[in-house]
Image (cartoon, rainbow, N blue to C red):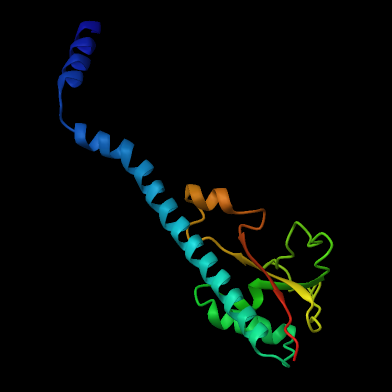
Length: 177
């Protein structure tokens, strides 16, 4: 009985059928997760670049349009119209504009005030329109759901709510009219 079992196991061990299938079954999940992580990283990079560009173009408009005093909703609408790859931009982006004294240290909070898509949008934390020749810091923060939350990159980026935060910060001086 034992000899028959040992000879059967020896025959199975010597067979080479299914070797490629076994290699595929072992290697494919790792390669698949790497591909998904690469796609997630590409999407994060694209969305961050779009947010940075939208904030820069909007601040450029603010600087060049002397005499115009844009309000929070106007600035947010401009940023969202230019950030085309950010879904639900109006609800997922939070803006902060803070006056700064150029002769003292910058006092912008280290942690950005981002929205949480699971809650009602909080009111604006700090948003002061600058006077002429006043140094302003504008920070936009967007909470975004990952495209592939089960990929290695998606798991590494997300917070407790299952989202990741992208921030864009710029500094400008309100030009005199």
